[in-house]
Image (cartoon, rainbow, N blue to C red; front, side):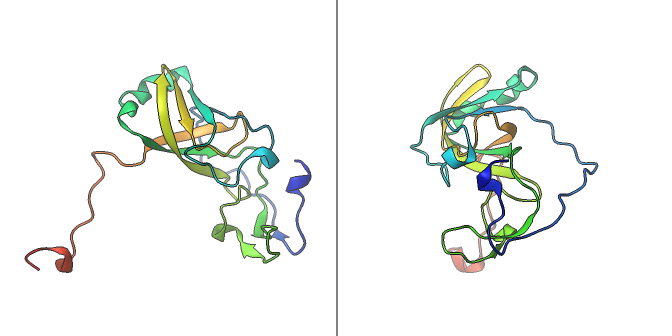
Amino acid sequence: MDKADDPRPGETRRDPPRIGEAVVHFIGRCRTPYATRADCPRQGALDGPLCRLEIDPDWADALDGIERFARLDVLYWLDRSRRDLVTQNPGKDGALRGTFSLRSPVRPNPIGLARVALERREGAVLFVRGLDCIDGTPLVDIKPERCAYTPLAPAKAADRADG
């Protein structure tokens, strides 16, 4: 951990969670221009730098059809993040907040989420814009932002023409 990981005044912590029975299988790695947490933008931008999602060969076929989507939701494991803060001081205004009310990478289960723009696919590599994680971050999952199988919410009576 680097200096940026030191607790700020007023933050509370607990012991990190014990290893349980859940298992996450990483499907690849995120390749970004960011070497440290300090280098990462606070939020990724769809016009940000070109990054790569390198999918392990065992999962390459799982990308079939992904080119149909302009936006993807990418989940990744923030493997270098602390996992012990219950309250955090985001540092901008000095106000303490609960971890679950923040998008901080410091969380009990450090899962990151980014909505990215898919630029292109080359084999088992997706070129995307919008990542905000350190280079080499383990990739957990990729999902289309929306797909043909997403059910639509039922119409409310006030929204129907006959209602």
